[in-house]
Amino acid sequence: MRLPLAIAVPLVLVASACSDPEPPGTPEAQPSASSGASSPTATSAPTPSSTSTPTPDPEPRRPRLGPSDVDLDTALDAVGVLAGEIGPRPGHTRAYFRAADYVEGQLTDFGWTVARQRFPTPAGSFDGQPVAAGPSVNLIATRGDVRDGEPYVVVGAHLDTVPGAPGAEDNASGIATMLAIAEAAAGRRTRLPVVLVAFGSEEPRGPNDDDHHYGSRAYVASLSGAQRRSLEAMVSLDRVGVGGVVPVGTPAEPNALTDELQAVAEKIGVPTQIDPFQRSSDHWSFVRDGLPGARLGSTPYAGYHSPGDTPSVIDPSQLERTARLVAGWLR
Ligand SMILES: [Zn+2]
Figure 1 (cartoon, protein in one colour):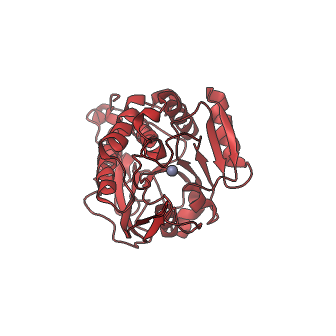
Figure 2 (tube, rainbow, N blue to C red):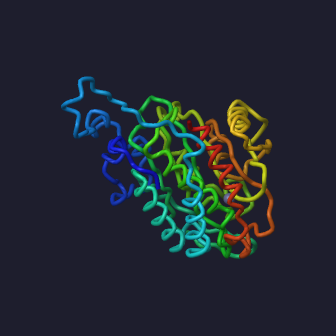
Figure 3 (cartoon, rainbow, N blue to C red):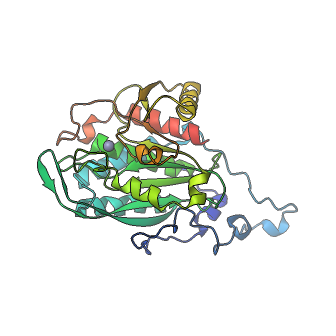
């Protein structure tokens, strides 16, 4: 934890929405939670000494987010909770909702406002075993700075696992990195507003392209025209704690977004490698619907989709590389 300055107050003024779940199919309740009724955060920030300050400063001296602001312990703790304590968590299960409660609690503690987006997941099968139908949920976190018609970015990671896999690398690693970013970014400026999303039911329930990525497809389908037009980029963090090089995945060829991610990585000394025609994560739900998206992660490992996907497979250095890259990109 770093010292939350008085400056951080505007970020938490928008009261928690977590006790008021979104009804299923609500098309536009998110992610711009702060538009309309809630007042502009800058004017409502009560700074004790403001009466004696001659020039009011609406954006006072919040430090800018940088790669070194990420606290690796936050990420490692999250891997331990999700993969060590909670374990396998297919998107419709009780364990999944326990995991969602945990992640929502962390995001809220860090000063983010969290909305829940429920969506149905159909029955299917994985590895020959039936998987039951049931509702799942996306967690959508904002800091109160997303405005209709103004550019923003989405950083997401799936929170579910396949049946029987504790999912340390797939994908507690991505959620853990996202939480470390949430903590680091809470009281700091970024070049654009950021929406963080923990997606439910990413894992496959059948062999076809419509048999996975249910949460991210529900999220994309819920975006208004204005929200779609303003989305500058989406980055999916999926399997980001194994290996020594960070894969930069794109559903087709390298493009402006992957160039940008690689340029940031090079600048801060994080080795990357392009992973072309990569469609096996939530970024694909965005790109297949005409929105810009990329994936970080996907290095092969022995415990993949198995009971062996335990916290010991995670290399803290790789988590740190990925988190630094994301922080550098958001900067
Ligand atoms: Zn995954």
